[in-house]
Image (cartoon, rainbow, N blue to C red):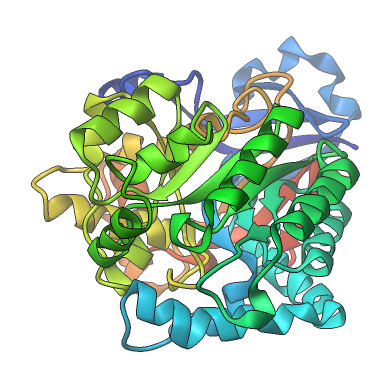
Length: 438
């Protein structure tokens, strides 16, 4: 359990209140030595200064020169039961839910099927360099159990929850409020804070939640104040109009959640594409976070996320692949789409900001930055080993790069899961694309 790894390293040394200065908090060590002890970061320093810790000779040594190591990617919005419907054609959000999502999620009532898919799902995360994630389960208790058990086996730090919904869904997916409350309570008692696992109360979104269900979610949050909350917010104009019809007593979409005390530092709202000014202010005042999901926003034609507005209000942002409206588990591909979405709004997403949101910034948005997201001593050893060039085009383009920032930008725009050579979780190699010798 003690490893010394020689490679190049990139991370961020502190959380940011202003991403404009992201590059000033970035750390790049071209030739460094990372020490890992019992799953935690022991130290990171320049190779030439290795004798500052002479005991490193007693560690198992890996020479990975030529590779870049960075903290594992943090996916702040992804759906476990939608892996089998990725790339479903032709609809926008509400129609897409009816046509594809609900039938796919109905399959997860079969616990044996859910167990098989949980392994496939988490292995895909690891293959793409995702070491931590905030995950939507299905409405089924057994499927959520299967997801937690598979994550526990892999020693991944995840936050997940059983979806809660009690109206406007097929009968097979529709819950009684009392059942939803009791099953969620059982899952919290069993899995929350077990090892590296955490629980998130997961009302799908306001339209599939009666006031009674939202009251039950609020009650569970009062009973278990350290759990997370995840849901969707202002993804689609048709959705927003529907919320206004269903909850006319509230002046906007976020006000519905805020009324039930579902905003706060451990609340993560996916999408947030069409927010009113008062909603931005509420997110900021309550310390709530947003998951930016560019791939799915484009795929469903939902809209363009205003990252600059989030910065103005100092709302924490993480990146979300949003499988299965998103079309890839790869955070690298997601960052590429994020760059394009911002270009359409005349905002040039910097390399430093992009990788911050994907690593330490994602950890901040999930209130996990005391545990993951960087190589500071004492952090958990979740990281990825990256090969900058795995295709002829990448090789050509990387050969013409002038500095590390350009190399990282090319990785972000041309890279994908093939660039992830190893994924380490809790101080051990959990995925390896090909044999790499010590």
